[in-house]
Length: 275
Image (cartoon, rainbow, N blue to C red; front, side, top):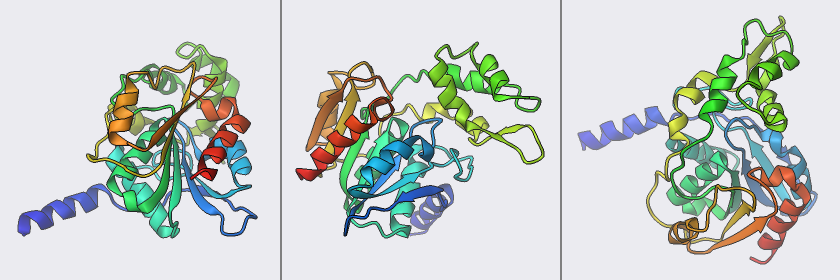
């Protein structure tokens, strides 16, 4: 009994409650089903503004900043145990019954772990361009580039873009990453994200699912045709862990919902309407 109590205390300390920042897009539709959306690595809930407004025609949409991202608190704990527990606390706090949980990339991994750990807390799982397996991340160069930005003496976003271009060639990717810069009231810039912790614990983002078991409820996987995040050989892994999974493809890269927002929302709504 004493060993069990110590273990439970350790888990509590490891997964202390974190009040996540979120934006709510209520629907004018009566009794609209709740939908919770999770962004990917280096992202924030604001990345889903366009999609949330479209989806709020049918659903009560909550876009959430995961820990160490956006306007949510920072923490030295950064793994899927912590992020899945954050989601559990969020769903509980807002009394979201039979929620639809949507996650892109890292957010999709959080959502999958949450579904396996707490299947009773959601009605449908939607995973965008990520599979239930381990990944060799390509984000170490990005993290190195962000750390190379001279944040303490930075004069402008243009200067930050020039410094980051030595590590990240794609202008649109740099624009996305530099949304994490914020101006300080006293002048200069700081990071919204907890860059030191994210950079030091990037390996925690690429791991396989942490929770065992199978999620037997409806699940939709949406992949980008030009992305290599979900490969043909991943389909067996998907159906093993999520036997009711449906896999759909859109003509995009990894940022499916950003590249074709209307098509993405239409596909998602059409799937949910058939359930």
